[in-house]
Image (cartoon, rainbow, N blue to C red; front, side, top):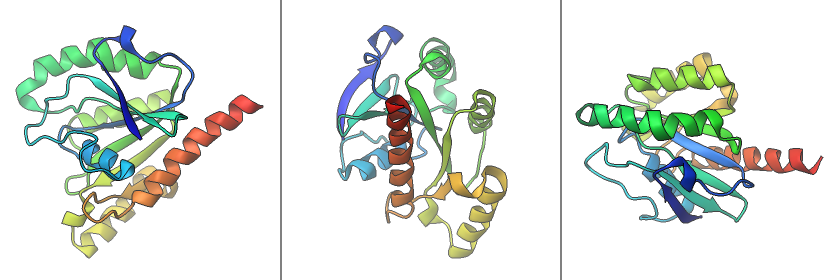
Amino acid sequence: MAFFRSVFTLRDLPDAGRPEICLSGRSNVGKSSLINRLANRKDLAKTSRNPGKTRSINFYLCQERYFLVDLPGYGYAQVSKTEKNLFAKLVNPYLEKRSELKGIIQLIDARHGPVGGDGLMLEWIRKWNVKALYVFTKADKLSAHDRAVMQKTCEKEYGMGNAVLFSAQSGMGLRTVEAWILETARQVEDDRAR
């Protein structure tokens, strides 16, 4: 995996052709940490102690076959007006009109479950019927009992096959996320070959 491009306007999107799988979630939910674990690098995606800094859609090229697309985080109160403008002009049109978008990884903090803007994203995923994987991050911060409770909640609310508990620290759930990404990209390739 390699960084490809930061996109600040829709006209800067990469040329059509490769499937795109995007990562969505609140600011500071762990999107950069997941990207770094997937890439087996510590600094490919920049992490910040100050949430709400990312103002671009960041593209990462994987195996020359597909893009992982890191969307700006949402839900950080101090940048709410800027955030609304960013989503209205860049993120929402990307999500609603980009034909290369083939799947979405929705990150949710396992300690809190869906809160704030998460509900809007979950509603959007259902409305547009996008293939989705729900990744509950920071699962290492939960006790084994709380992880079991969260797992049952995931299964009940999102279905067994599309929710996973993940820890960037321990790597818990990483293989499941990798397998889902590869399957989603492969499915697109198979559909094109028919």
